[in-house]
Image (cartoon, rainbow, N blue to C red; front, side, top):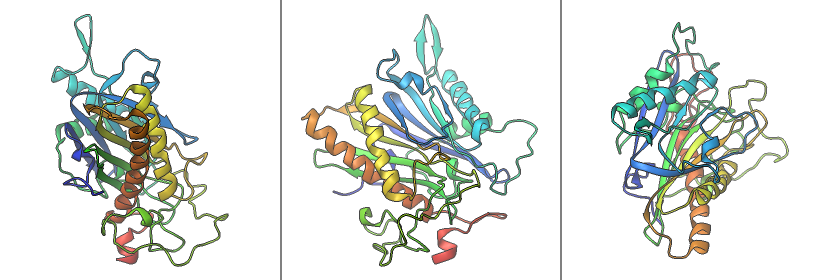
Length: 329
């Protein structure tokens, strides 16, 4: 199986992505938007999440479709990014109709990037502005690395970043991943340069180095324990027709991608979270076999996206960690 034309989450037809960054604050926002509302689910496996409107994504809740999904830096301050997105969507006339009032449904999640060397002495929370800017910038093409929600991200040894990847299944269904990598753990094996996600690499999308030849003691992982600069947040998307319950299952399966690409993952100090989005353009021919394959593809695609985000990071003044390229390039 091969990636889509862009090897980005926007290979899923009907989806666009926008990013906004503030280089001085060292933070940013990423937005996934559909041409029309899409079905969504969520699964949280980290011990320290920060979220907005995720309760309504449970399979038993009334609203099954959303207008956009938001990933943001800024810890709790970053939750305000979704307000900027919601304001913009309302101006577009987008949202859930409630008695003639339009209410955009915009779930979001945040990562902690408040100790990364950026200037955090703002007098006004910048995230609502960044959310609106990310919405306005939405399109099918975008860069990876130090951009959007990955602008200020770091891992245990290296600068993190914004990653994406896609794959087209034999059925013609497309699966894509978008992720802001800010993990407590490491994306590289030992002292590197090989990535934990190497067995799942397609071509040379993150260097083509192959698997590591030596592995450290698996019981003693490399972490930035004590720094509290953590949380990896992502979105897995598909053009398959899925229910809200099936989206929740897809998000759950995609967490295997975190575990394949980041060691350790899902720790008590990470708020690791994955949203799932389904546009519904392609009905499932076999609901059992197809959902199994979708889940496996989601995990593999997510692992690749994580490595691509770290591999593509670029340096900025005051960075607490080097980029992969600076250390190994």
